Amino acid sequence: MQARLKIDDDLGHAAVDVISNLRKAEGQLSTREQKVADFVSANLEKISSMTIAEVARACDVSSPTVVRFCRTMGCDGFREFKIRLAQNLAVSLQYLDVGDRAETETGAGVLDQVIGALSASLNVVRRQLDNDKFETAKDHIANARTVLVGGIGGGSSIVAQEASNRLFRLGIATVAVSDSYLLQMRAATLSKSDVILLISSSGEADEVLSAAEIAGGYGATTIAITKSESTLSRSVECALQIDLPEDPDIYKPTASRYAYLVIIDALAMAIAQLRSDNTAENLRRIRASLTAYHGRTGPQPLGD
Image (tube, rainbow, N blue to C red; front, side, top):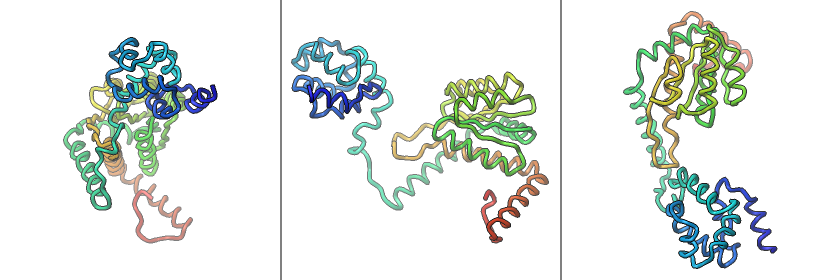
């Protein structure tokens, strides 16, 4: 009983990640349940097509033992365990046992890999970006009363923040939002003179799609930087579409982040040139205020 309680405490009855639960339970299971665990570990991709009786025979245990094992893993029974395991495998196979496959690089080798990924991403942007759509996006943003930039998730939220960071310096009232609820609320405040710029590498995030629908419903211009043929690309007025297959090496940086940042920089530069008088004055004021703040007058990056 004490051993069972220890396993329950360690796993917390969480069935979200049964592969993790399987590893945590190693060495804590009863002899018969360990047989099931060993068989599952060695046949992760086969379990979903097996019946409980087939698993029991393969492990030389009873069907109730298989059920007990599944409950130990945090599932109600064998059916839920198979569903959870299949879900985990759908996204986890490339992350399992990567240690044996990974090539260890240091120093210049790692730098070369990252620069190579960056170069490949930028070449894709050059080939795929539609110039007419780029010009349309530029004009809308340059003439907007306000620009709401939305991005949900790690990479997209970073790009959204950078878009806001670049645009406000040009005299465009811009706010970046990465919270799903705030994005809906902000979208509902937009009107015909406003723009919503949405960042999504998948183009399928419900929060982003909802924000596009809300903002568009109130007359705001909807623009997206996203994957082609995605739901988002079909939902907005102007979609800057880029298809970037991610590198199977899970340790390399996400390629879409490079591409989207380049598009943001290109938009900011084009808008700055279009609004050159206002832009120059805004940048002068920013530089003057920073010089008064920290006292440094030497050359500094334009964006800082």
